[in-house]
Length: 178
Image 1 (spheres, helix red, strand yellow):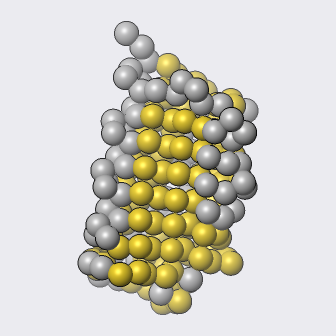
Image 2: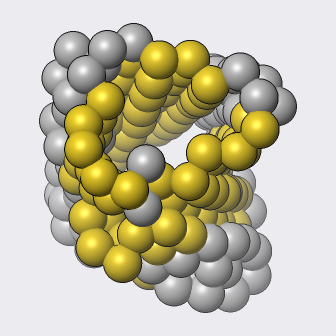
């Protein structure tokens, strides 16, 4: 997709999808099936106002993903961040969300790391400022950071951030424990 708008429900069933520009409209649903590789490689900004359901592999190679949409990562879904950028859409993660670049990646919308979800920061810094609820696993490498820059960070009972380098630079922290 190099421009234009996806306006209707679409399902990617195999192969690769390269998103260089354009918009996922508010009524659109983009289903990414197992075995599909999606790469966002934008020097600028792409927009998601609808729903993205990722069960495949989504690579954010750079640029910005803006809009008020929803990004769902299923149990089989993986997101790999390999380039600097920002995300705004709300994320509901049951799979893997991995930052693999020695860069700063900023998520400004709501992020819910659900029961089976994991967030791994292998390099650089993952910044969250729109609210983050953790019911899964957050981990980092020795040189990487998970950083709360604003909003409310809630760590629920049963979740794990042990071994993670977590920086609280702003916002509120709520720890629910038994």
